[in-house]
Image (cartoon, rainbow, N blue to C red; front, side, top):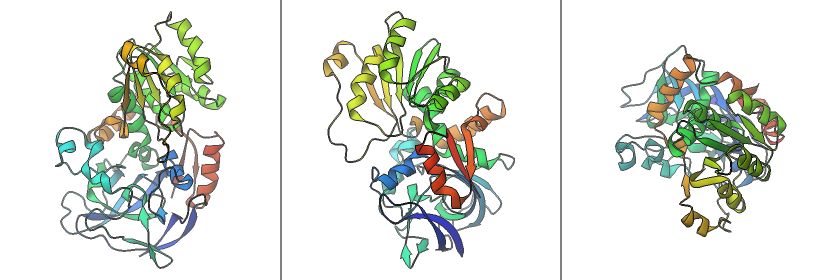
Length: 370
């Protein structure tokens, strides 16, 4: 079938919205008509080369839609089912999945190639060439074919134009606070970067019972929105946050520091560590450039003498098959704000405008609605 998608042909180029040819799903795969896709900063890392995935590639890894066709052997999904994609597939059988770490499923090892999990080939073709998929999903498209391991079935009354954000940003941010940081009642938490992931880290910290939540972001609009999501204090930079923390904690500093900037910078790790208390934990969720080889500028003596911790977090260190339904339930009960995350919606043809708005700091989250 023919459909429409946004393809990246080379680094530092705009997204090319064009017609593509889409094959039928093979064994273990499903054809999905997408309803919406979040415009995550991780896809911007494709265009800058910070994530050196194989090109050409159809972007997008936060998607939700309706199953139209299933391949051989798919028994638990059928046409008409509503699904959210997890940006990392989960097989349920590998050592990570079987020990409760679906976010580290072995199937994720193929993400950089962008081909189908089952046979390493492509179902998507443009200009006579095979095209890869961001996170083996390619949600910047009206239709896509994905492996069943990437699908989470949800109730049909869930608004997919909001729920698509659970495929990455919401679970990643929320889990960075609740799981990776292990925020406890009464904690003081600093969230560095109040965009799509940071806003959900703030929500996670609030729901976990944090006493103080300091949102750090240079954009005033994002600092104001952070207060709506649960921040108690804001600062424009980590330098500005340092005396603020010293004042509000009587010098004990933050129990947890969560790094959710658009692009990570190892030279800032020393500042992040300085915000952390004795036995404080710094969670690194934001993506660093793949070719960043300069290392992290931080005091290892401080790490040892103050027993501080540095922890990485992928997909919020969560289990998408459990956490996506859980967070949808919390949204239904009014405990989790999805509506407030979406600043503006765009059509697929407006994708480059949406990413420019992200670069300009105008959006918490932009969403493509098909």
